[in-house]
Amino acid sequence: MVEFRTAMVNFDNEKNLKTYVKKYIEDLPNINPYLTEIIVNRTSPTSVQMIVTADTDELVSLKTKEMEKWREENKFEGVIDTMLLQGDVLFNYKNYEDHKSKYKSNELEN
Image (tube, rainbow, N blue to C red):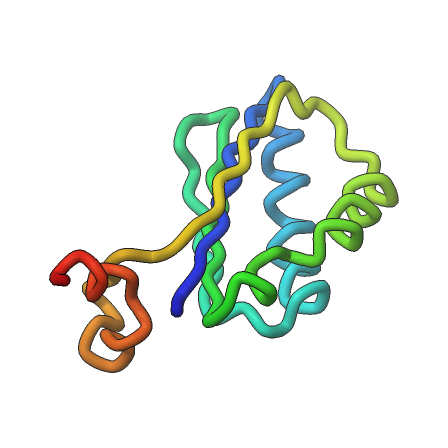
């Protein structure tokens, strides 16, 4: 089964967003090396969305305590709010043929 986690983070200015994204991209693969995909989307000048996937929910959980510690250690400025979502990937066109047995969309056919 393929799992995802997405976070939307809004900042008070573009500089704080860039600082956060740079550090996130540098550090996340070391915090959780089992992720299969990391996608970072800039949704506005002061908002960013991060999407990560892994083959099980244990791996995509991002080791919550370690991520909290990472945020505390880095003391990011200007974070206005954050929204987290996590669940099953129902379909991914890019990888569908290679991994179709892992997607929850198979359950929709029953």
